[in-house]
Amino acid sequence: MQVPLEITFRGVEKTAALDTLIRNKVDKLEEACDHIMSCQVAVEKIHESPDHGSPYRVRVDVTVPPGHEITADKNPSEPKQYVPLDTVIRDTFEAARRQLIELVDRQQGRTKVHPEQSVAGIITKLMPAEDYGFLKSLDGREIYFHRNSLIQDDFDRLTVGTGVQFFVSAGNNGPQASTVRVISKPGVRAEKTEHEDAPAQPPADWQQ
Image 1 (spheres, rainbow, N blue to C red):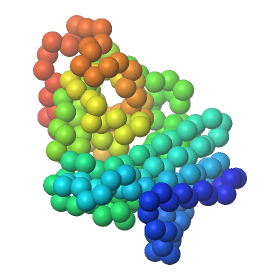
Image 2 (image 1 turned 120 degrees about the horizontal axis):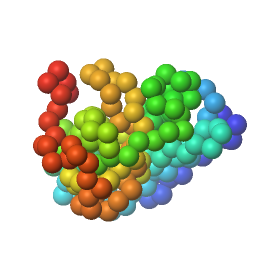
Image 3 (image 1 turned 90 degrees about the horizontal axis):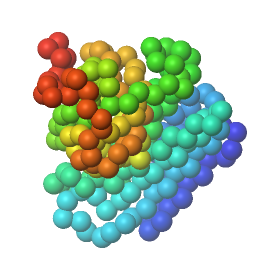
Image 4 (image 1 turned 135 degrees about the vertical axis):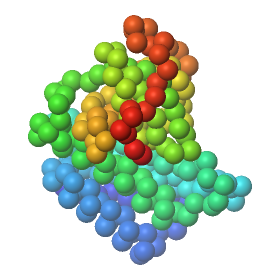
């Protein structure tokens, strides 16, 4: 890493265990991408004694040459049971690691889409409890995406009809969307295509 790692704790006591966990996770990021320029990690406590979810927020910002910025930001709010800090840290780094792997694949030409070419589409189906959904590209393809593929952790902002831009990569069960970016307000539909009126269904051979 060209720039020293930055770790910031706000409202959270810095412990040797947390520091070691974070540094180990950064090492995993460097295994996924060996040309990371910088990495900033922020761990903060944003409220006390939540009824559900977690009081903690963890953010990981990574820069990769020539000018790529990857952000993973987690503050679990949906689970009914308390989510401990170490779990939030692990989930945040896993989201960052997946984005790095997708970026490296694009940079090395292992996907069908040119590294600088994104695709537009709309959200057609959401399964929030399972953290995934399907979107439809403007050429009519149904494509799977996961919560961790959303830039800025925007999964909870999505509704059917939200316009997005994304890259396409090869998944275990067919094409899947990565680096998904919201480009229209949730609920505002993108321009209709001739395929849009048909309800979106997972491919017959697709399995979660």
